[in-house]
Image 1 (cartoon, rainbow, N blue to C red):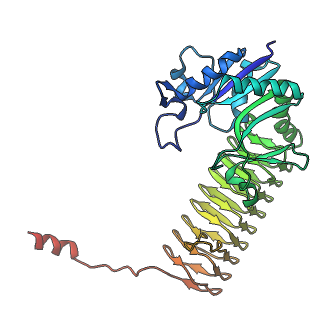
Image 2 (spheres, helix red, strand yellow):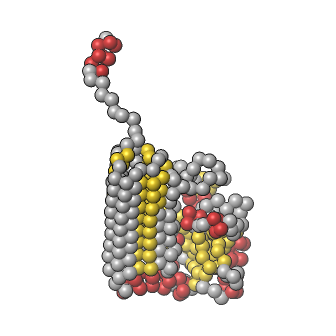
Image 3 (cartoon, helix red, strand yellow):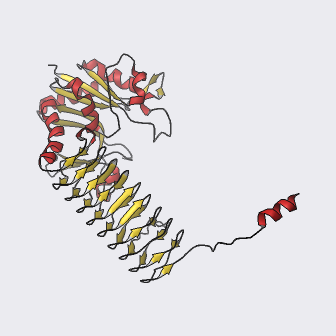
Length: 384
């Protein structure tokens, strides 16, 4: 058994760099980003040193000890991918592969501090001039780490925190692996169906009721809850949201903080919901964004609907959209908040709604179609 193993996470894509080349493989001063990181880790002599890479990038690491992460589902899943290779180590150094300015001295200092303190996990944090999209370090009253909140999930108070997560950690292995295992296992023993535990990430703060189903490649985070009979996924992300009895989420769905799906509601394929309540039986099945909205029971949201909640005027708060019970919206509707749609109203396809719609009314807000018969034939004759 070795004292220290190391995992370098290098399975991310180049999405934010707008590049087809994975970010870790971009060149910098004659070496790839990942090569600088490996060079910083190697002097610590970890045994083994494992690189977690995406399936398409395996050939770029010829001769290295690699583990494959099928989908980029975060640090926990990355460690699961490397587990078989590092399972015998006492301690585990985890490093993000996109930190080319890391020094061996800093990493050694981190490992030494972890060993001195005798804790289960140590996080390397820092305070940049602009926190940008880094996860915020939230400390308790005693100064100890309470949680790490991703920027997308943080409230305004948390975004004001200057101390951020570097994605560099040291763990006691005998405390890490049970923590990764027991969450999913405990839920399954309690009657939750998790179709593929290896691709499912569930925070310890999440509450799942028996007879709920979690499909593969699903991430449940924060103070989220999933009620009996509900089904989430595949490929769904749920953050600080409430999924009610028999509700459906996904596939490819994102529930952001403050979202509530009541009994039998559905947020379907490529639907994003933020800080909104979908009443019982509401269906938002296709390619829609619902933000800062309240939708009454029995309403059907057509494909491609958007609640336009963000004002252009600086300093003006976001508006809220209220849609009543048993409303039928058309495809490609936009609701410019603040706006209210009455119970049992209909909205015509392609309409941009800027004014309130009375109950049981039909709202149409688009240019009337005009058919000019024979136009094409006359145009051809005119052009000769």
